[in-house]
Length: 177
Image (tube, rainbow, N blue to C red; front, side):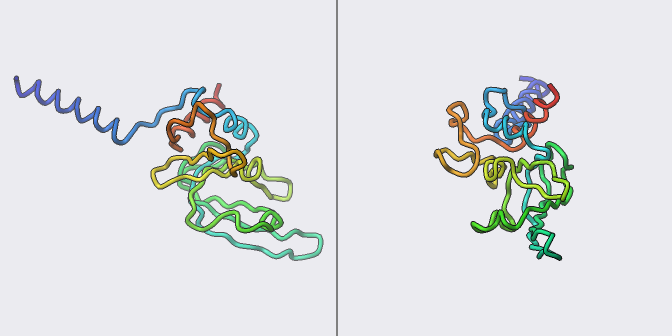
């Protein structure tokens, strides 16, 4: 076998191996994006994945003002309304936190937020349905049990976890169509 042919074979094998091991950014076919996720995305003004960097409560300055919580994320994957790499802060009404903390510093999430209101407040679409955990490998953890917080996993997506990058690309493409 010639050395030129051997180099071509080696380069091809390396490319195939890299694609299998590291994956490629590819849009999911429409039947792999859960319908619940598509519906949540259609109602969201802001969609991104990122890591919580700070949580700051703010007391009401006067009786006609509401107490709020400012949550800041480092945006990792931007889909709508933000840019990748930016620090993005949003405010929620503090009353949403009455049942306990909604976020924690260091937490990685895929968020679907409503467009901010006239008062500059927002929250996840469908409350906890718009807050999906992301694991260390960058995969979205879709709850499989009915009643779990988050979007329920459909039968078509139960076989394999969904990568945030693939979901983001698919949601961008759906919006373009």
